[in-house]
Image (cartoon, rainbow, N blue to C red):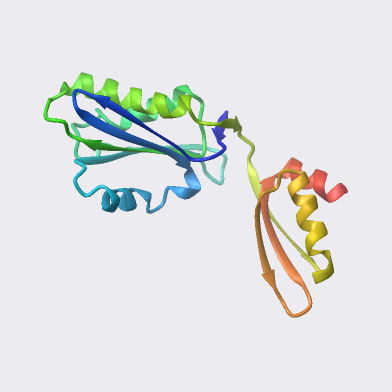
Amino acid sequence: MKTLFTPSSSQTVVNRSKFLTTLVPYSDFEGLQEKLKKEHPKANHVVYAVRYLNEYDQIVENSSDDGEPKGCAGVPALNVLRGAELIDVAVLIVRYFGGIKLGTGGMARVYAQAVKDVVAQSELIVYEKCVTHTFVTDYSSIDKTLYALKQYGITKIERKYGVNEVVWSIVASQERIERWKEE
């Protein structure tokens, strides 16, 4: 399985209809559909498809046609995510109607193509299940700890500063955390 390294977007135009496609990590999905609707008030539809692992390591999938004919938008987008073996991702497609009807089959093909286009230009990495690890250091160790974490590719880092200590919360694969702890 693969996942997304950084968010990506693309544009597909078919019969004057414009499809603006955004591929993001699943953690960024919440609220993004509403944000896109506000950014594109004249858009006809904002369709989405998501795939992620739940706490029981089961793949959860969901999609929305957002007013398009049933099964013509969200499902084809989801099928592309399945075919690319992507996990922990969400794809959102903003559609501006161009005046020419595509038909249900044509619409399904275009939505699938829009997702294929954004996946093709995205930087993908091998999926690693992440865990959260919390630990405490003193203030004198901040720079050294930050440097070591980045050396092991641990980039999701939160710090809370206390009176005499710093509480760290990091998110990474169990393997990366174990290698870092051995240092």
